[in-house]
Length: 196
Image (spheres, rainbow, N blue to C red):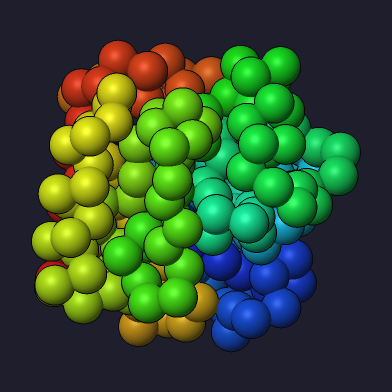
């Protein structure tokens, strides 16, 4: 399965130019099997996400992109509540309690890489392929992923129509919801891929 694990939509991500339905239509057209909506410091309400899935008939997963002192963090398995974490340590504590997983987003992007001795402890891995980053940034991120417990993930980091599906994560497992996504991530049987 090919799932874009990093996508932003309006109104939860004000920096995006897309409504969720547009992102989903484009993901389907571009051959993806699913998309993960990772809004900036904001959670989707479960009822709204379920209604969106029903309307579109497409696999839509929810996660969140957190702003922390170590840069942006893709958090899988956190559900609801306050999505504002000032520190990666606080995000890690919340993820641990929820049995969630954290990945450092676009780790080689200028000005955002804040790696220290805690990085390997806090994050399962990094976003190894980001569709909005350069080839050199993705090469550096892929190299960085080798120092973590799990392989790096891939996502488009889409904020506009042209960006949807530039990168994704290829999974061996069938994924149907957030629980099966977490299980597939924990298994480590996936790879980040650039699609254009």
